Image (cartoon, rainbow, N blue to C red; front, side):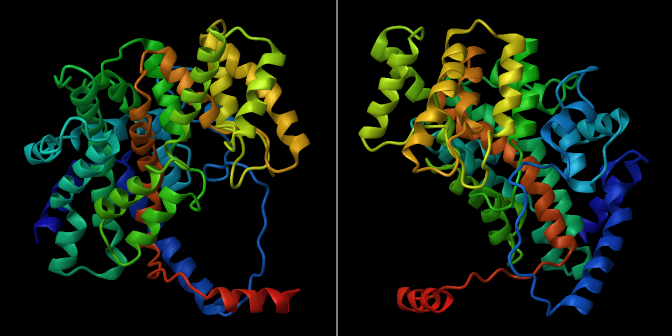
Length: 429
């Protein structure tokens, strides 16, 4: 009964601009649509589905989001709260709705002492992602979904405690992540949240950065790294782990462990390290096109890939790269590392295209983000994956809520032997 009492108390405080009320109105409609779809077309074979390889947030491109979603000021980058509202409801929020959600997230951001103690039990030398996952698992003790399920709750209402867990998790992640940053790289002193700041700006503030440009970049960074397709390792892991009704904390901790891999969330730090290796080789970031071309061939001939180029899904320049480039052109056009990134973009694609070994020779999001973070003083690249993790929660949370709202089934990936696979391929050819 504790969950239902807490929900009732929260509901009394909610106004017409709050997110839960919006979902309460649209979830039943979507539940009925899914029931009808299963009943009428449950046995239909859809065949191969293809789509233009782009990035969409509820059908909106990143430029659409930048143009339409509320920012901290007119013409500013989209607020992460606005992206969260869009992903959950499919609707463009008003500034009033975004401000209401920002206030709600701040009210949910209290961290229990035992979460900090769990992190402190690890050596300071532990990787930042190890500490981050540990903090998330410690927060799981307060899972509203677990309490509600054990107490008995109708399946159609599973989404409600999932909503509570997801928003609590999203709200608390910046404080946990900032604590780890201050503990591992700085003086260990906690910088308290500022109730006047939005989600992205508060995260930057608690890390120790208050340059308005850095606050604005953090809003953009979180927004564009939130999610773009459920097939990426971290988002799909969260969906898979949640499918047997594991709560959002357990699912998101698993997602973080997938994100920690060098082929996923660690990629942006690999890019920055590679760029620094170029500077170390030539003693300056101001190098000629010929020198850069030689270094790229040297990288490829050593058996390595060019970090930040190519993508498993996209077949064009990643729009997240493009919007970061536009941000850099506006705020730091003369930065030597940014200029080197621009030169790399001109040199790498023709080389990769000529080799003919990659389906996408264009830059992805990781080719740019590390240089921007480095410019604003966040130089600890081993922490960059934690930034990615905080951002990804904005995409994963809505996914988990809708998984429960629509009653999606336990996921059971199929497995076949190599012999069976060879036989199937032989038949199809």
